Length: 345
Ligand code: TYM
Image (cartoon, rainbow, N blue to C red):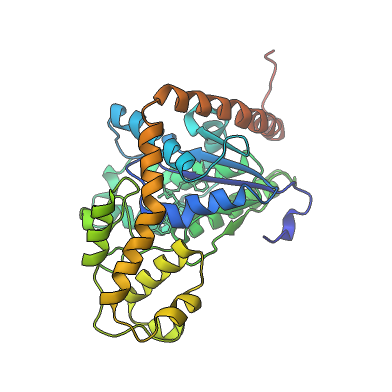
């Protein structure tokens, strides 16, 4: 992790995941697995279930409550330790929404209009009917990060542009108010699987919102379902090449090799060294075994934790108190910088 312009800020990691559906293998490899690795680096790690982001599209309240707990259970089952990391849900720390509003006044409409995720989500639809919250979404994400003065944000590749926007917002705020208050946060996009693709179409991201369940592996899938989805995953007829460059133009093959590498904690080069020359008929069962071996214990543990939702809520509440203790003074200082009178006791 680089220090860059942030030498004066204590290193702190922040990241979040939306509770807007089940967790996918993409969320696990691109985010949660890496969050867990970072909690052992000695840097403070703050992780969030971003429920306020989820409501930018309508959510059934009962489903949202369940998915919030299920996502927390997913974090814990994957190895997140609430003694080492802070885990909480966003709506319990009101400074996120407060700073989000401030940033709505800093960010420009043109910046939001250029966000590819906004363009993708409204493509082919009437953008006039999208919620204002969906448009402003990246500004709340910037607030999530900057209300902790986070210096590093581990994300999958699809979130890179949002973290870059966070840097622009921090720089504009600092410039407009003549301060050096917000850090210029670094995205951390590392590992073999920063962009896990659909199992049905190697040019599309694996996503919880894809209508085809066969396109993704869910963290709650049982062993048979995982094996079946991998067996049916689209591939080509060529054998495995010797070198990573030779996977260019073979998106489905590249995706399966990258998934294997990320699950095994290897590089793509190492995987190819073991499998070069073999067809996908023999590689897929190995990949399925590895996926089941890694994901089945997570899914079982999630199920166990979901038996006791009150305990999940308790840990989220404790996490929120710890998060609030960091965020509140930063928010108060922001109000002072802005010129707001703060006279309540
Ligand atoms: P979300 O909920 O869509 O995804 C959560 C995390 O999972 C990563 N991810 C993937 N990585 C690799 N391959 C995939 N197919 C894949 N699908 C998802 C995402 O990159 C992300 O890291 N806007 C964010 C949530 C957010 C946030 C934040 C993140 C809100 N505030 C502050 C970081 C910091 C989102 O919608 O992620």
